Image 1 (cartoon, rainbow, N blue to C red):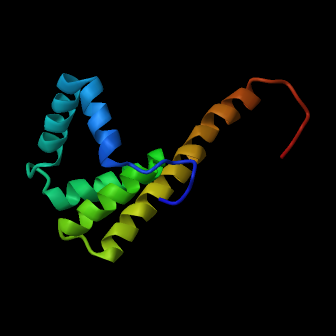
Image 2: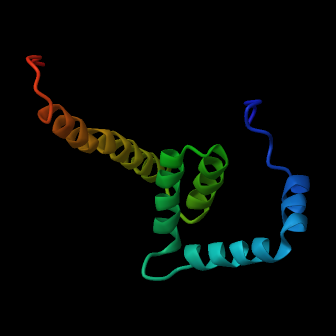
Length: 115
């Protein structure tokens, strides 16, 4: 990542994170291993979900990391891109669905304005 807004995730940063909260870090690592292990969903599917979620949360570290992991788990470029499109649709769909709140708000006001 060359964007200066996001510093590089270095080994030194990882070591510092572990040093500052070793028990929590170890628990998180184990949690991650369990979450991404084969289960009802295979690792490949889980990594594709992670790619989509990373795009929704807009975490550049997660986007890069889970894209690599999805590829390693056997996901092809087209599968990864489709997962990203699912994320894009879900984000757009969230805005569309939440228009219900605005429309309810507008319906509760007496006004003569029309679209």
